[in-house]
Image 1 (cartoon, rainbow, N blue to C red):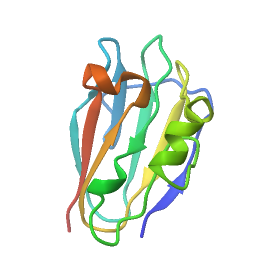
Image 2 (image 1 turned 180 degrees about the horizontal axis):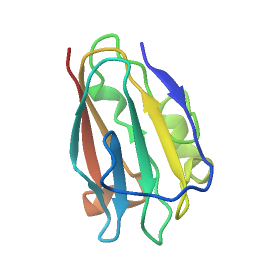
Image 3 (image 1 turned 180 degrees about the vertical axis):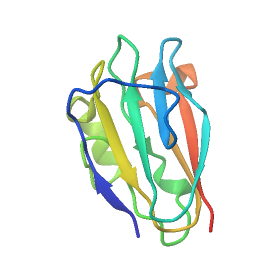
Image 4 (image 1 turned 120 degrees about the vertical axis):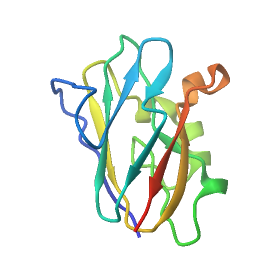
Length: 124
């Protein structure tokens, strides 16, 4: 089961922090893949000048894995339908805590066609 928190507050972003994925210029997540243990939190920090989303690819969730998205949507379809509600602005962040082991693929909806995607691997 995933516990989802949206920390949409203005913060100072640092790409070198453990458990942090930066959204950087060039339309990419850095690092592209992050490995955590069950119950750990991943913070997505927007270090770019553009708005982004963090949207789990629902069809690729591990069995028993809970869906997550900035904007706290219930599904990928809902996130795509009301994309503006999920925007993470420059110097804002979004966090997700995952419990279920497996690989969680995610995208930035506005930059999906540019290849802005990543993976969270939850390992025991």
